[in-house]
Length: 375
Image 1 (tube, helix red, strand yellow):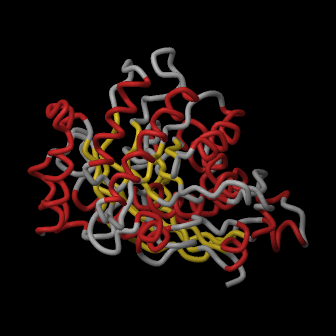
Image 2: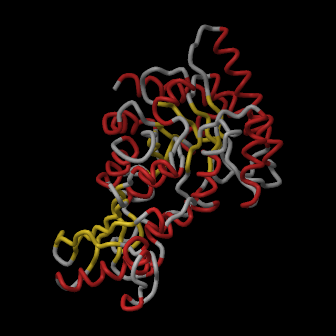
Image 3: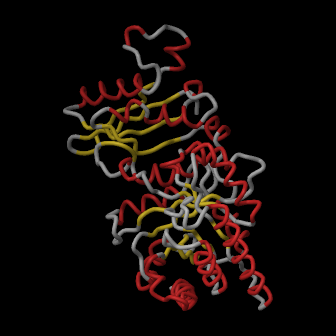
């Protein structure tokens, strides 16, 4: 395929208006000049976006498919996103709903290092859903958080994930916290292995700090014994995640958190479709696990939107299939229904509700494992 394609939902009055709006998107996301002054030759034939089709979708909406040449992108992810939904994101009634990459896009942005199959090997869990407690809350000391990491890992958690609100606050500075937590999880893994457990817990600290410290802190976590990292692309940028995923010296899986990305999907007439943002673009940028709010929780994503995200994570798409990770106000009694919906290749998050167990939080982890395995 000569060009990669982006499909947009276009809100318009009629077919002619929809076609005019599609042509405007193709201009805005590439050359950004009036159509009559686009230079003939290379700029017009190659760089300018090309409207491939505009077809009716529903009352008042059309699907416009626009092809873009890799030359409009270059080799950096920020410009790729600028082409996909740059100036068009400021237009009324334009929502990006699908991306169809071509070979050149896949070559320049290969995606995750591990994906679904790689995480199976890292955890040693050949089958079943992943038990993932969320270590919180902020304001706790590094020692308190490390103890929660130990208790949950010792009880059989697959991934011990820090809450995204843990950054570099004075109560638990990043470097101090990560060192203690990594040691705690490593100790739990040794004790599990001694008892014959062939699986192990992976510890994912939350990257905080400044934007220009992301790599430094990620490498520190790796050297300190972390098994992965949690990154917030809505704050640090999708390119920060992509740079880590493609860094030959960084060898840990990446979990992406949705904080600050809500406005990109919540409007029906602007931004991205849920599956495109939390599935396709996460895969393209190098996430191995994509966290999103589960339906029925406190954030209001619908069942259809969640299914769309899961399909975009695990179905055909750029790079390796990755693991979806629903959370957001979930409880133990929801796990059987969630397992029936999302299946085994999924990271199941439980956070605040686990804290009710106190020092017996390990019991909750074992209950999570039982609930997932019984479904």
